[in-house]
Length: 500
Ligand SMILES: Nc1ncnc2c1ncn2[C@@H]1O[C@H](COP(=O)(O)OP(=O)(O)O)[C@@H](O)[C@H]1O
Ligand SMILES: O=P(O)(O)OC[C@H]1O[C@](O)(COP(=O)(O)O)[C@@H](O)[C@@H]1O
Ligand SMILES: [Mg+2]
Image (cartoon, rainbow, N blue to C red; front, side, top):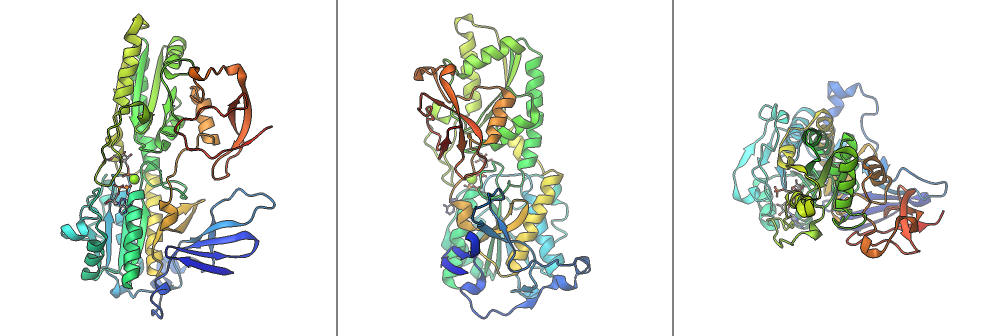
C-alpha cells in the first residue's frame, strides 16, 4: 500500500486499483496523543451488539456498478465508533454552528449531536454558536444540553440561527482557541463546507488539538459524492401539496395552467423528484436543461398541444431554470451566491402574454411559490433518522480523532469524506442520465435539445447511447442530428457517444 498526503487529501492505494481517499487525523500533525478506551464499550445499549465497533480498515466504495475488469476504485473511510478515542470525556468542549439557507432537519442534527456527545461519550460541554459563522466572533454563545434540545426536532428552522457571509477565518479560529473549544461541528451546504475546510487548515497550521467535522446540509441536493442530502426527502414530499393545489386549480378552469416554483439554485433535483412523485406534472423545467419558448419544439407549442388534448396542465419550474433567458441581475448575496430573478413570475407573465396575443386561446393561469414554506417545515420521519445517523457518525469520527471531514451517506453506508471532495464541484442533474429520461417519458414534455432555428426535424434524428460524466448510468437515449450533436447551449456535459 502506498500513501500520500497533500494537506487535505490522504490517499492510500492498494491492490487491484484500490484507492482510499482518507480523511485527516489529529495524529497527522500532533504525534503521541494519548488514547482512551471508547466509553461505548461499557454502554449497556451497545455492549450487546457484536462487532459494534468499526474495523479500522473498513471502507466504502464510491461506485457500486462495476465490470469484470474494473479496478476497485475510490473508497471512503467507513464511519462509526472506534475502539479507541482521542478525547477523554471531561476534556471535550464542543460547539455547533449552522450556516447558509434553512433546510428541514437542521434542528434534528443539532439535537442528535448534543445527545450523542452526552449519552454515548459522557460529554456535557457543548456550545451553540448563534447565527452562523459570524456568531463565533460577533455574538454570545448558547449552552446546549440534552434537555434544551430535547424537542427541537419537531420544529422547522434552526434554534441556533443561521446567516450568509461573515466568514472571517482568523477571527473564527481565534474564537475557537480562546474559548478552548476542541470539537467543531459545522452544519451547512457547499459554501459552509468550503468555510469549514479553511478553518480546518488554519487549525492544523496552528497545531491545535481541535477536530473539525462537517455535516452536509442542502435542500437543493447539490452536494456531490453523497447519496442525497437530509431535508431533500421532506422537500419533495411537501412540494406535492403545492403541485396538488396547482393541479386542482388548473383542472377546474377552462385551459387552466398551474405553475409551481420550487427551490434549486443550480440543481433541479427537487423539481425532478417532485415531478416524478406527483404524476400530475406535464412539464418540469430545471437549470441543467435549457429551454426555449417560441417555435418548433418550444414551450409554447407544447402548452398549446397539451391544453388542446387535456384542457389543463401543470408546470413545475426550479428557481434556477431559464435564468439565461431573463435580464441578469448581477447581484450577489453576502456569501457570494448569485441572486436569481423570479423565473416563476417571469414565465407566468410570458405564457399569459403569448396566449393573449392574436386571441390564441383564453387561459387561466395560477402561479404558486411555496419555496420558503417548504424550506421552513420540520423534517419528516425518514429525514429524522437520516439526520440522526449523520450526527452520530460525526460525533464518532471526532471522538476517534478524525478531522477535516464531512459525514455523508455513500451507497447507503455512513462515511467520512475529505472536505475537498465535497467542495470541488456541485451535484447536478445529468440530463443524459436515465433519471432525466424517465422524467421526459413520464411528462412527455419536449427535451428542448433542438430548436426550429437549427432547422432540425424529428425525422432527422438518430438514437445513440451516452455515458454521463462519472461513467455511470450509460444507456440513456440521446439524439444526434446529421452526425452533429444538438445545440446544448449552456449545458456543461462530458459525454461519450456510442453508436448502437
Ligand atoms: N469559499 C468560501 N470560503 C469560506 N467561507 C465560505 C465560502 N463560501 C461560503 N462561505 C461561508 O459559508 C457560509 C454559508 O455559505 P452559503 O453559500 O451562504 O450557504 P451554503 O453553505 O448553504 O451553501 C457563509 O457564512 C459564507 O460566508
Ligand atoms: O433567500 P435565501 O435565504 O438567500 O435562500 C435562497 C437559496 O437558498 C436555498 O434554499 C439553499 O441554498 P444553500 O443550501 O446554498 O443555502 C436555495 O435553494 C435558494 O436559492
Ligand atoms: Mg450553497
